[in-house]
Image (cartoon, rainbow, N blue to C red):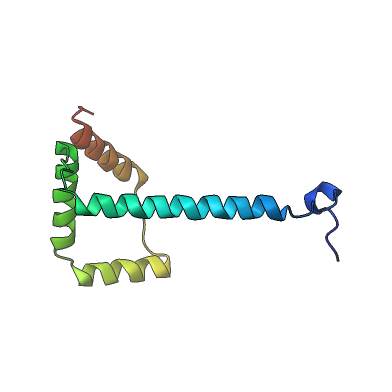
Length: 111
């Protein structure tokens, strides 16, 4: 099966070599300017600074705690096996209550 509907059936436009070479030259000139600007920036004194919001700092702390948290591998393996066997049961009401409580804790609202 051949594909006949490329470019909506219109014939392929011929390449404009002059335009193509101008575009390539412009790209080359632009990259040369970027390189010289980068070199000038690295040789000058750095005055950039970064500050994190309190929310970002809290998020960073939570991520560190998550990485450092102990893992009960025995419990994880037990749950994996129960899920694979189709024996793991979920209580949707209890799950919804826990999600609501977590959102209340995160956003500081009362549920």
